Image (cartoon, rainbow, N blue to C red; front, side, top):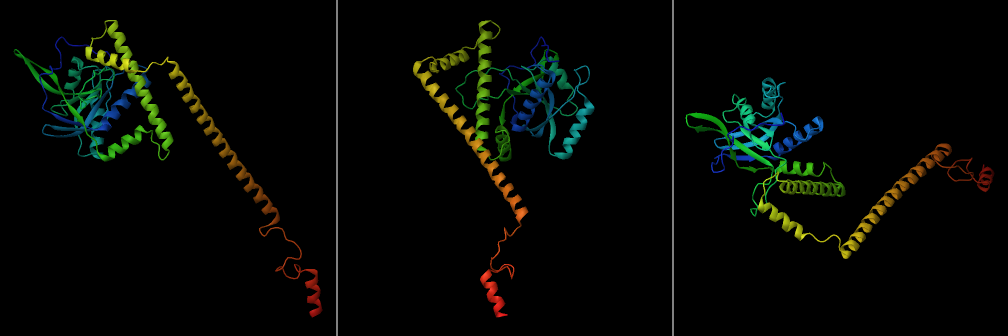
Length: 336
């Protein structure tokens, strides 16, 4: 079901037709959809698994707020949503979150197709106008001077009816959305991005650096694939994107310069030396802890054999007649 057929007529109205919805998307649905897609990729060993789920939130007039999601199950024909499963999960979430309603569904695809229209009609009994939220992980975004432009690979669609002649059909209208988050959500997302670590600032810093490098690598791979597809004639040529890539490549420093190589080697050696010193310090700390434990264990054994008062010596004062010195014992006898 990952390969979706397209209809003769487009199911999305042109951009000249705008939606009047005001959609606020919270971070939790974004994380849930991304996790759902990643997990299915690993389970099915497929790069394009079929992902579908329900959207929960609130709607007040034309203001829609997407707060949470849950996954949906498909029937054996991979074309029908399991209605019993949907009802059960909907009622379970209703008991925990009474204010949240079913407001739409989500999937992963490059764009809406006729098959999405067929799936959309199955959600009409639960919502009069169920929204569609599509994750587009392979979308290449063109460079835009507008800093407020949406950069998330997500698009929201509102269902409507398109009249052509005497016939009507269901279509989608793209609706803009904004990411809205509260203080608790910001703390949770930041904690998740840092790997869930607590006070270990060094490990959190390294985890964030690793995530940034991985994201940079994924985007570079995506850009290289886009350029390769353009050269092979398999992708549409976007001149603004190509100009931005040309400017980016021209701004990069030459990596084969002698001075750059010397400085890089020095930095590399410094990093290796720091790692070796860190390992040596950690080994010294472990050895110090081992020595301390050995000393404590040895002292405990000696105290067990000798006693808590230490070794008793004859002639120590305060120990009675048996502990008196010879001179003091003679004086005591002559006195008595």
